[in-house]
Length: 167
Image (cartoon, rainbow, N blue to C red):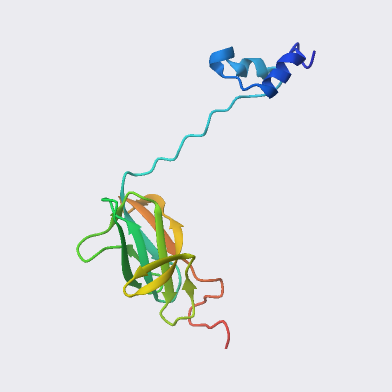
């Protein structure tokens, strides 16, 4: 016997054979005397069915952004945007704010002075050129009361306004 009257055979059985609560009732009660608990999977986060895409340039430098996302109809689309330093906005095509129901995106960004680049391993052709894009995941949230997906870029820690890394 081990612990408080729990036969060794049951302990070995628990370690070797998967047991469901349908087979043996509430295992939490059985293991409770030994200090063990059966814990359910954590709840999955609630994500919107779709949302607008909000971008933040946390860098003080103006950037060019090449952005690839999956539209609501399932088609992948690539767009180009220009952002001033520290500018944030909803992304929009020529007519409307863009929406997606997919949190996976691809992006390439570079500072207008060409000194900083945000890129990755995914090759995507757009606007007559192949871009090395990074894969990203959009954060789910709410911006100004709208259900939104958000992402942004930040400069390295040496990005101080009106200063250069090397002088």
